[in-house]
Amino acid sequence: MAGPAEPGNSGEWVEFGSALREFRKRSGMSLREIADRIRWHYSLIGKWEQGKNRPPADAVMALDKELGSGGELVARALHAAMADMRRGTIETNSESADKDDEMERRAAIRLLTALSAGAVIPPGVLEDVLAGTERALGERVHIDDWDRTVHEYDHLIATWRGGSLIKDLTAEVVAVGRLLGQRNPPLIQAGLLRVSARLSGMLAKEFGAVNDVRAARVAWRTARHAADDSGDRDLSVWIRTQEAGNAFWKKRPAGAAAELIDEAEAIAKGAPSAGLVYGHAVRTYLAVGRGDAPGAHAALGDLRRTFDRLPDHVTADHSGHGFPLEAVLWNETYVYTLLGDDRAGAVLDQALTTHPENTHGLANLELMRAVSLVRDRDVTEGLQHAVTTLAASGSVAGRHIAAHLLNTLPQKARTLPVAHELHTLMA
Image (tube, rainbow, N blue to C red; front, side):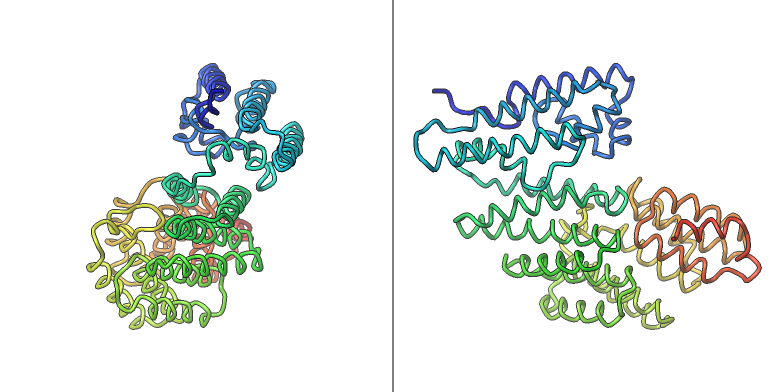
């Protein structure tokens, strides 16, 4: 008997990809244009068109709607998913195999129901549907594949509106949790724990973006525990300083953020890492928040000194887990702008030229420009620039900067229509 087809390259998924490409070309849209419409990265859509990856159910539904395929793309995706399930089923008369087959059939019915109703597939359902294929492949765990998945989410979370990735990240965390429940070799288990920590940290940020405080707290706790159990010291530091930064932007008590940074520094023991640098950055935010200019400048000095000690691969990493030069310039711009330092304009210009396009960080720099315009008495222009920028981005840090702008408005300017518009966006 021939072995099962590779999940991402089965003939049915190749046929789905060909149909997707044909409908996209008929629409006249490029990969980037359809990516902007359905809010999935164009590189992933390209892989779907090549039949290399399976698209999630919500992406199929969005593509079907945007490309006007009248349900054909949904039907092809269902056909491919069911074919994968059939190929993955191991033909045996054992009682356990019968139970597994029944589980897959039930999961397939849930998948069909979710897709036909236009709903999002519940976490874990697709994995249940495809469980037979994974068993036939020997349940191998590919950490490199998971690392690539994390890297893709690093990009998405930096560009998509906060909260929009909750369902996808939840499904990924569930899938990794199931793998952790297997008997894996120590190195594989440690790798899965690292993946779980990073995904859980991103999920915590997404919960924070929609003000689900309890869910964010639970996700951060899971991220910390997974990082610590993985034995990766730098990751343990990174998770804690990320949580500290999120605590600051979400206006939790300053002591909560400071305590997390203290804990991270104790773990780091002076070893330079992206997490340690970011801890210094959060200390600058805390100092600015209490109006402590000397404290903010001292923390910036610590940031620069630790940054200069970072390995090249960390400063060259532009994903969510490195600390490149543009991150240093972003933090300097934040401190100088909010403290009214004369150096703000020059550093802002430098930061704008180095920061990646279409990211929340770049949008937040534009909001800092709005703060500078208001401070220079270009009040209406500054407010309008803030409204335009915040409407397009709306990150947690962006709302914080916009709030600072509103608090520093001259009294007469607070009654302007554009000021009310910014207030509305903040709400």
